[in-house]
Length: 298
Image 1 (cartoon, rainbow, N blue to C red):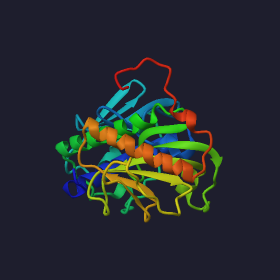
Image 2: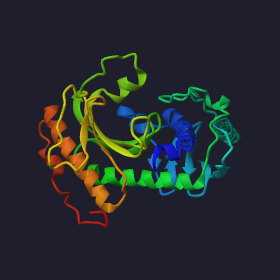
Image 3: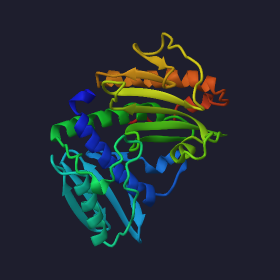
C-alpha cells in the first residue's frame, strides 16, 4: 500500500495514535528510551495496554477490524464508532467525556508532537478521513512489521525493548540497548534527551513519507553514524545505507513469510556492522539458542 493511496487516512490514524499515546505518556510506568509510551500491536489494531489514574485501571484500544475505539475503565466498557467524517476533535472529546463519566480526570498535552500540523486535538476539524478497507490494510502492514521485527529480536539474550507503535514518528520499532551511558548532546530537546541516552541499535518500520513511497524498514545506531557503510553480498537485494539519514534502509513490496526472512537477514547484517562500528564487546552470547523446545514460531 503506497502512501499516496491513503495519505489522508494515514494522517487521521496517526493523530488517533497520538491521542492514545498522550494518555499512555501520563498514566503508564516510566521506562528508559520512552519504551513505556509505545502502543501495543494487537490482532485488532493498537492499544495503550493497562493504564492507571485516579485509583482506576483503564485502557484505550483502536479496533480497526470492528471500526471502533474501545475504552475499558475497570468493569465498564464504552465504544466510540470510527467513521469517515468524524473529526479528531470529536474522538478526543468523546474519550475525555467517557473517562470523566467514569471518574478518571486526566489532562494531556493536546498539541501533536513530531507531526507537521500542530492543531490541538480539541480544535482539529480537518482530520476526519476513515476507510474501513484501508484501515484493514494498515493493520496487515502493522502485523507484518511486528512479526518481522519480533522474529529477529525476541530470542536475543540482551537488554532490549520489543516492537511497539511509536506514535510521535508513527513507526513500529524495537531496539537493542547497551549499558553504556551516552547522554544526548542537547538537553533542551525533551524527546531526544530521553530517547537517546544509552548506546543502542534501533530496528524499525514506517509506512512511507515524502522520501519513501511505501513501507520501509530501517536500522539506526546511537551514537549516530558519521561515516558511510557498504551493504555486502549477505544483505538482501536493494538494501543500502543512507548517509543523509544515517540508517540502513530497505523498502518492501511483498509481505510473505519469505519477505520476513529477508527482513531478518537485513536486521542481522546491519546489526553486525553497527555493533562493530560502536565497538560493543561481549555480544557473542546474544545469539545462543534458547534452551526451550521449539514452538509454532521457531
